[in-house]
Length: 618
Image 1: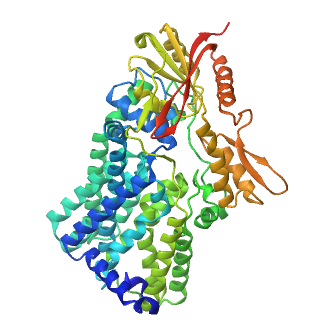
Image 2: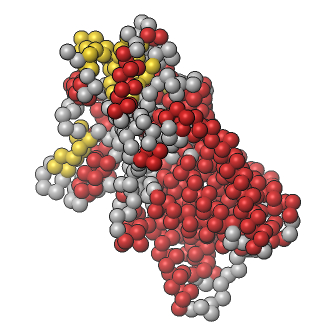
């Protein structure tokens, strides 16, 4: 730490200096024992941080993470019909882990395990830094510090201890990068057997990452490009890439290929309902479902995108993630390129070829992300590596003594900004049980069908409801076709007992608007030009259920969406009216006299629901 942040004031404090020195020696990656101690310490810290954050309650968990794992374990593909909306048919491999962890273990223990697992990312991240800085004098001290700085980036922090898959799969992506760099080093040294083992491990880990989350395919392409950039003769590089690709494809097919094949056999589209314009699965509309709202809109935005989403984080995320790493990377990369053109004869610091491969992986991965997704949280794997890349750019841009000092301050500032602006996807206070649902009046589950009406996430309750019933999504985000509606009607008509599940509202839930307006004021979104961004947020973010009201000149606030009261009972009645309108399009109606409001909770957070009988429209 002194090596990065040393200055006169710090040296004038002997006690702090000695403590920092002890920490340096303990965390230095100069022996297997230190590596193990540092990793265990970070994992334990990760578990504690997860406990402090609380029970995970993000939108995706409530919509499909819990349900999909349950549905796979209980073979419900043919029994239910899209209760988790269009996400019902995403690959459930990782969600089986989430389901078993969160339902079978006490909730705080499950949260601790997830936090410790995310803390384990420190190990491959520090390993990559160590390989990339091979030959540098301070490598053993800098590698773990740069890894710690990577853990203090905004996208990673936002998902910490939660079920959103980016943090968990980043563990496998970065481990694949580590073994790729290791294979290249062995390849250059002529160690044939060792290099093939390393390539095989890299491919297996990459295949796991892609199987767990398909969007990691961009990192597979980036890693293949990086693998060609170092490692001896071209024929050896091509051989290594071939082993990497074949093992990755085999592992991904083994872990998730069977799922896509089954979905294809059942629905006529392995990615159902996405890309249905290509596959033409009958139950979905023949359109390619793609979320393009996060992508740059013109050439100028494409050229300056890191600056654009640093200024306006809501352009790439549904929550505000404060970060400085991407604009700093952008500016220093441009400055480094310009300096290289102007002063070609300047002696550059010597770095291992692994750094060149890492830069190719980073650059290709970023360009693919910007061109295909533009969703900030998909950048977790790259953002973890970003402090290492920034440190390297400072070494290329400045003389060594200035690069060390200014680079250290820049990385410290990046970490501080992310920590101070830490935002998450939703947590609740802990309870011993992560999820609880009050049993509905369903006397004969085997003869019952339940419609989950509307676009709110409700499927998380299904694993805690009677398993004999059939659960069907109606008027959700699923791109329904006429065949879908016919199939839904056949399911409903095939069961004598018919029910509808609708969201309800509690006093605790209505406090959300007060909290959201506090955050809006804190981030200057409730006045001036901030109101424009608040309007964009209210119209784009799923589950926000809000609109913007102007309150005086140049000021605004979030309020419940049009027609929704801030009084819980009135809001619940209005939700029933909306559901009634939606169901009327299918020829069905609610039996208002049978509607009851029941309790359900995530941790200590209240998520009540309404339960009504369904009847045919008169």
